[in-house]
Image (cartoon, rainbow over the protein chains, first blue to last red):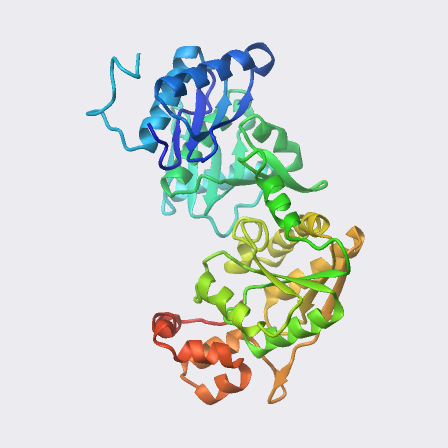
Length: 100
Length: 348
């Protein structure tokens, strides 16, 4: 999938994360702010990168403001932000494919 | 806990607005005159317990009731406001806040741009936004010689601007002109910039830049575009001056030139703040007197008035040939229509 415009998903409330994706040319660029950076920073990065890889996003700038979201929440927020950025709607979301 | 909900307050909801004002007052904040969106968090009794507002791409006037602090209300509200900003197409968002409250915003993905000690802090939601802007500018800087800078809206470019640029260019080795790139004036940015470029073609040591979101934009300096009270204008000017000193450092700018300001209240406040602040950072401020026509200083406000009244003989005397020929060209017709449609064309 190709990130075509800036899109946001999620909130800043506790146990959630706000994920912003923006178009970019040179690969994946990540900006992470987290309330649990010291404990889970590496894990959050890994989950985000893995989700983007599943979605076959090669180039994007992704900004995450994490408030202690679980892995499944993070995954859902990243997926949603990417779908919004390329105009996917409920009809053409790749269930069972990129979304597992 | 989940009995709270957040929603927009309409301007006509005087009960909620009164509660917002009371909440802000407790925090020592006065509600800004120019806001285009205000939201509030309500408790189960429909009382306002937290509030925040937006103006264009900036967020401001935040307060949380002291009985409800520490419950994460600010985060609920910020999510709501960011969603609103996003729906307007603003993904680069700025926040004004008191120095004491800045740390809460750092936790919500905001980064500091500038701070006026003991007063307020200006933040943005990009980690390297300002740093990247500065390093882009630094590439266009000149290491040798004396560099100067002029910031102008040039709405439109007059002989007054030309005189200012010529004077400034003669007093330094390199002159950087920042044309205000915010599209809030009757002449669109593309036209204003084109007229500055054409008007200064003959000068070899002039470089033209766009001012971007950090110099006199509606983020740093909203009262430049919309009328506001004097102390508010001063605050905005102070912020703009603080940001400018950092830009000057990156670009090796030693002198800032401004036109003397007999008419516009906001620009004269701005000039006086610059004259206090810039010398502290080792930047000279040079005030250049206005050039006169018929013993009256030339001003872009008068030019717009003359366009409105189709006073071509006046225009030909106060505008450089490039601006006159633009105004007479077919492309200018929509701008001229827009000026004629405006009730007040004079800058406050």
